[in-house]
Image 1 (cartoon, one colour):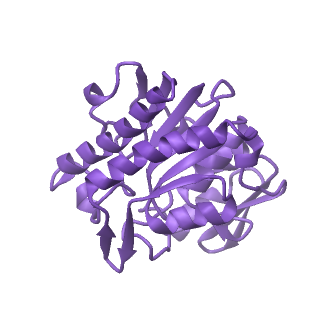
Image 2 (image 1 turned 30 degrees about the vertical axis):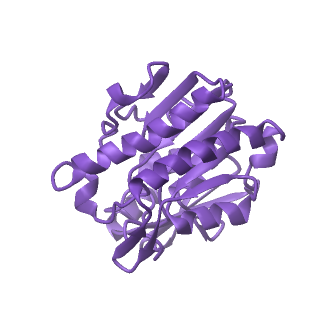
Image 3 (image 1 turned 90 degrees about the vertical axis):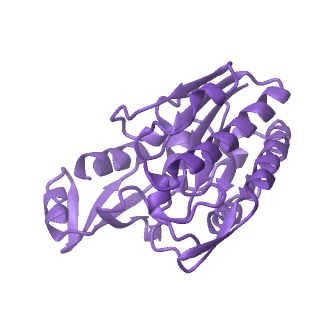
Length: 269
């Protein structure tokens, strides 16, 4: 098997403040925890006999994971290429499955004080067919476009509940629960141990099913809407081919292809 891991930071154990997500403050501690959670997943995959593993460092600078702590068989993608779905950069049909670690609830959710979708300074929210999207959704749809199912998700309780409600086969590890501006978090070591155990369970479950059994539904007709924080940015985005301004700060782009929808977001961000 060949497995792709995409790792973010806002959904890892304990993290609760934006200052902890970037250099300074307690960032070094939380990048180490991010590394431990990714490492635990990799080690469990190796126990399952899987050594063809790619890790995508998918937070902020994309230079967070302490790469020397990962198993030597692991390849890692660092920095941003500028691709249409950079958090899943270079994923293709050669991968059997994907795992997401450190993911978080979508914009406007109260389940994580760090809830957001994509660019926090530019987007209020992103919707597909009137449903608010998380980064989990956008990245999963992109993986599915390449016939790669997301079989496991680690992140806050709210996002895990959303994922389970859409496909009961996905394996989840809930790291914490939001409480207003705070979090109630599991002990970091407990989360690491759960990731190890659940990764093995996810691989065993995956082997009993087809790839498409893990897919989450996406309508053929996609109405992709970006609610911008700035009406000026929305006005500019409305000139993208086939885009339509819904009101002063919301722009819609209709398509039947998730890649073209993500391209709209990339060039109008």
